[in-house]
Length: 321
Image 1 (cartoon, helix red, strand yellow):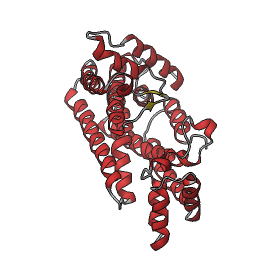
Image 2 (cartoon, rainbow, N blue to C red):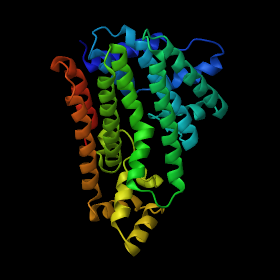
Image 3 (cartoon, helix red, strand yellow):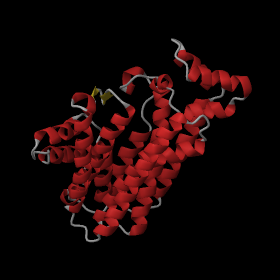
């Protein structure tokens, strides 16, 4: 049995060993670059933690965990292009460090290698494995498109926002757990419960991220506090505040949120306070958190085997404010 920290070290060593070395270097260097950036490795780690619920040695599950991490980083390369983002994890984004064409093509080859790594697993029913992986990949694309569509929409409903973050962020956490469980020999019912755990966990995590973006301690958050407000992003806090305000107050709030004044963040936070938006967000975050863990607690698994996954996920959701 490994702790989450030990599993991360095992995976990190495997990632370094599997570094892209094929030619031309100009295709693979950008892929190696983004994979080398500091990262939590949450998705492969969740997959390996799920595998460890049923088996002790990790070797059989490492190719699938690598597939998940390479796929995730492929999505980041292309997301950064669409967002025209200059930095990722505090470093220059791939399309800025190299160029747009290199980033697109390197992202494409990462996607193809993700499937190649998945093929390396010894799991017998690869059709089922690929069906679950593909469904998650499709939903991630749908979620990304929804997110882009929301930028142009004036009236976004909270339930649509929840569905967007489920698809864009949460399903990859869910399928990471599902695939790890499948490789470990879990029944379809158990694998489904782990998928539901990961998906609801992911929604809770994203709402927590919305809260932290506005209210975190800047010394602990690792990025600019208030960034979502500055960019005018439609977060849970924004949508709930807009829902609760009416008439001129709503119009004034929207004007402040989409404006470009020096006191924008402070003004918007005052609107959030006026309607208790943070408190609503915390309630929803906790509801999804509790629902996630209800799936995990319903598994008839040994407490000792569950402990590393429980320890990791409980700490991961409730990050410091």
